[in-house]
Amino acid sequence: MSLSRLLRRAFSTSVESDSKPTIRSISRDLYEERSLKQLVQRFKKSSEHERFRTKIGIYKVTVHRLASAKRYNWIEEILEDQKKYKDISKEGFSARLIYLYGKSGMFEHAQKVFDEMPDRNCERTALSLGALLGACVNSKKFGLVSELFEELPKKLSIEPDLVSYNTIVKAFCEMDSFDSAVSVLDKMEKKGVEPNLITFNTLLNGLYGKGQFADGEKIWERMEKKNVAPNVRSYNAKLRGLALEKKTKEAVELVEEMKSKDVKPDVFSFNAVIKGYMNEGNLEEAKRWYNEIERSALAPDRRIFEMLIPFVCEKGEVELAFELCEETFKRKLLVDASLLQLVVDGLVKESKIEEAKKLEHLGKFNQYRRYSLKLPSDE
Image (cartoon, rainbow, N blue to C red; front, top):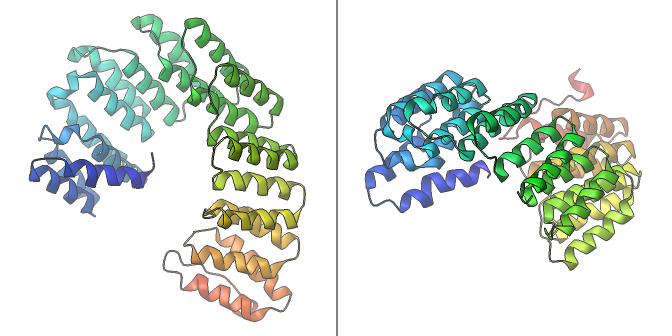
């Protein structure tokens, strides 16, 4: 779930349903608090309200803000403070702390919460096991996930559920251990745990994304045999695979298949096709598919400009590169300064000084990020 959606859920829709204005105002005040130090103190004070402690979204957003600022000591302060409440004896509450520590990359703290659960008469089931494995993945300790997955279910007599299996599949894919990931899929089926769309999409993204197209196709076939219908993420993984294979014609056909099956292509679908044509050196088709994005009522993302601008410059179309740069400013997209400098240099080389000056001006006075672009006269 995106941060913006979390914000809306945490501080508008969810709190509006509260009958107590105090909870509503507390939530709003926390969101509006700009001082992180004050945020920590106010969060701890707010946690005294039992109903506040049910607001999962507020916890996620607050920890995210602190993690973004690398204030890990303050994350520890607010989460350790939660242990004094009776909720800590509930598995769901403990699993939440494990998850939050994991999202912050603080796996040792997450594991400590898990290990302390029996001392608080808190049962450990597949729920908390899944949270711990997820914390391990989020903390990028991928190798440790396999050890925990093999050790803990036997030690604690916990039968892993679908979430746990999906987590270990993701860990293996992150390590490019695709044989191991597929073996987990086999193990799931033997245990009677049916893989779902998340399982298959994780494998498809890993295999197609790493150029193992034939193996990706085998997983696609297994997905179809299980009557698991592919969604846009499934198709996008395959489109990226086709782009890597330079099979852009097949990618275009796949986009048509998506439409025929009422799976609406998104901007990532178009990005994959454009990338395919770029890999083939086909500028005209790359431009045509770029224009298709807007015709499909979609907005190009930062990634498309990061791909297209260097490619267009390489093909000698600096005027088009200039227009693409203007578009990034218009859409308030933050791209790397080196991309813009590349275009400035190309414009100057072709004596398009006015355009180069305009781009330098746009960068200098951009309200979202100041770009220090250099013209020859600046040197």
